[in-house]
Length: 492
Image (tube, rainbow, N blue to C red; front, side):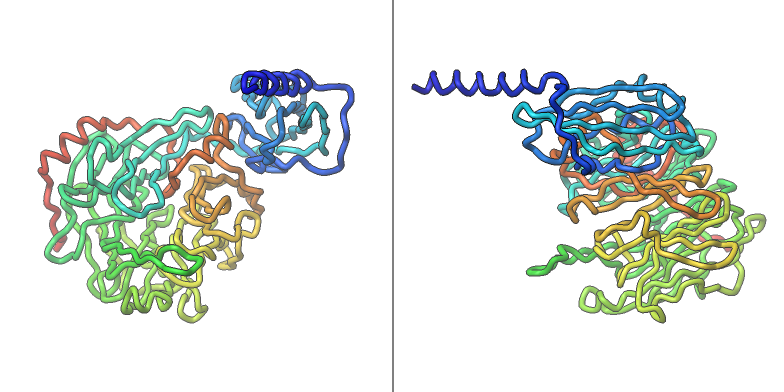
């Protein structure tokens, strides 16, 4: 009997496959758009991005048949369990239609019956995204050291991912703040926390140094880094990160800092530049970022309070202070651009566009750790007018944060938990000269539905990189385990 049932099941599966193996002329048309994952309906993409492969959201769809036609010519086709486009054919089509449209026709088959959906468009932007790819940290949302934390880079034109540094090479270490200088991977810094920790400086000439950036005048080593455009300085926040977990609430975790100050390292002399009355105070100064011309240093600041008990009182403002790169000195007056306590919210993670036009930042109801705030949204300030607005085009009802700009300032990448409220994933959007922002699209994967369903990692701290990061993890491991660090000094 069981043998008979098994045969009947195989026959049924074969019947479904044969019935859906090719697009039938007996197609039911619907005015509805296809319900696909990822949602690539009406997105804007750069030419040469990896193919936007997708699946139907419904698990009971047997096959999909997809045809994409370019407004300037060209056509590609995919048929299978999901839309899987040939990379070379896809790139030829997107290049041919730069500045134009792709029209996507989707048909799906269920139980031998095909359904044709309303067509949708994908816009191919006039703006290039010339970077090799993006770097990011992958970390399981268990919020602990463990689970093979790693820093990775991804070729955004293909589906190739490469590890830069993983915990399997350095067990028990936490990696953060992998920061290039304006997308240039030849000059980068990263911080390793825990036993045998240290700050790595990789300079433009390829020279690497492992530093101890903690001194008697600072309470911790440097993290949350940002380079001066000259490459001669790198700003860091010195702080301690702690976590508390909720019970019986929708929010799972609150992260906070007991202290935080901003310092600047002169990488030529290994000297820290401190401002005791301005950015190394009893307030919590955090998330530094130099302006593209190097004349200003932006940062967030909040009053100290008893955390975690008073976590809801953490309200950050955005300030800036003049910086003279020739002398390595700061001005004596601080401008407050956004006042968190006055507005009853928290402004963090300031990131100026590299063309000097825009200032993107995160707004949440509280906290200086926005990735754990479900109400965190991206906002944009026009630096020519000082006007700000929420980026309704890209924001969701979950945390949107950790944003960075492409070198030409027409694209940005950010982390969003919009899919499920738990896992942060990478999204891209473009912006034109008038500040019009396009609908974001998820980082493409070969089989995105399967990839993201089986991934237990959050993707955070993303940044663009012009070329592939050339990093010798074996040599880095030797240097970390050797535990030899150059001690930084305080500049007189």
